[in-house]
Length: 186
Image (cartoon, rainbow, N blue to C red; front, side):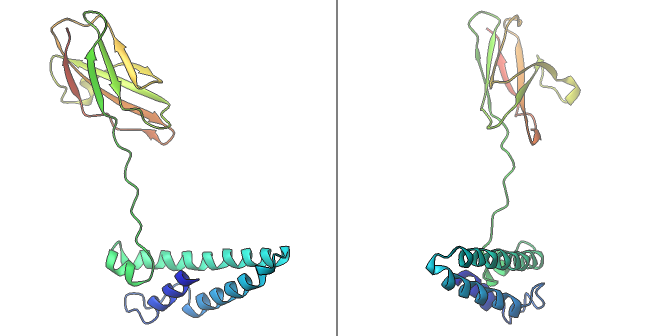
């Protein structure tokens, strides 16, 4: 209840939020009704508890509308958001690109590629280029796909420089390719 009442207090006469989508009197009435329902549910009766949950849902819905209003008017300004009584939330960070390492394989002319495993990855796309770092996407050659975060190549030209990169296929889509790494084949 404290959170709800604090938001109402902070929004009252706040010049940054002159016309809330939900009137503050409606919000206060919902909080008052929720508080009465909490008190009524203390005896443990099923009907009283159900009534309390109904009031929780209704109050949460009103305050979600108030939060959307605050978010819309504050336009990401932390000080303005905090002046409303709501807390600032951090935006989700984009999925990090997989890091990639290359090591010598078990035999001459082979390379073992190891990417940082990505949670919920369905597959990994492995690409390479020989001698020079590609400038355009079309210069990269897809050398394989795997369901694990490692891939082994054989039959490479010894003492040649290769560049490698990897992307991940996940339920959300395909990530960008990792930063390319280079390796001289031994």
